Length: 255
Image 1 (cartoon, rainbow, N blue to C red):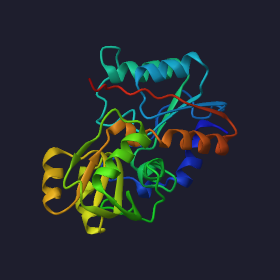
Image 2 (image 1 turned 30 degrees about the horizontal axis):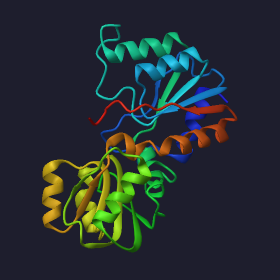
Image 3 (image 1 turned 60 degrees about the vertical axis):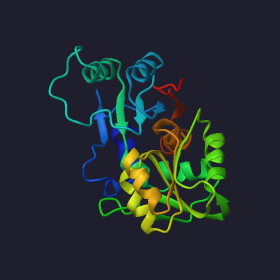
Image 4 (image 1 turned 60 degrees about the horizontal axis):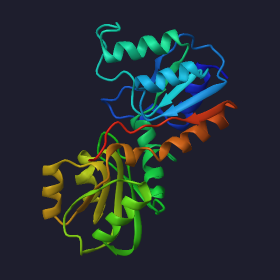
């Protein structure tokens, strides 16, 4: 299977119709789209360390969640972070494919994996006009918000979680959106969720939602999205017959 064919196969599973209108995904960089894929490295981000690791260890593809190219590139030189990443991938023979919001919304993607990593099985989807299937919700046996927060912290291996809302109230439906999920808070409320688990909810959004009875658990961008990487590696390997490996490193620390 070639780089181009791998992207086409991934697009069959995660079609661009699931992508948000503002997103940028697909083949970000490719020295040769017709090159054969033998080794795939999966990472949340196409950071320089991941690109260098891929090039040094003979990986043909770096498959990421977050787009390597997002806000637009005006020049490609070693003087910028983005330029160095692009040049490093191209010179190292590494093609970069990024899936982003279609991987969030797709079956078996970020939000399915987040829900399951927290110990629940998805019951349905919710979202907004731009992406109606982005989020997941799980109907659960009644539990308090504080119990849920402690469970999420343990299951995801977070150093800490931030909670907003009444922790002693019982919850029967939980919404999930990995990463920056604040824009889905109204949709989670409309879907009848009593709690919302996400990476980052935003101070004001979480505070306003708490007044309407929504308990919010913020577990960090990395920890809410990292569970998808092993699943994506397994999928990419099954599609291509190539060896797949997960590379992930959290950029931030909590002191």
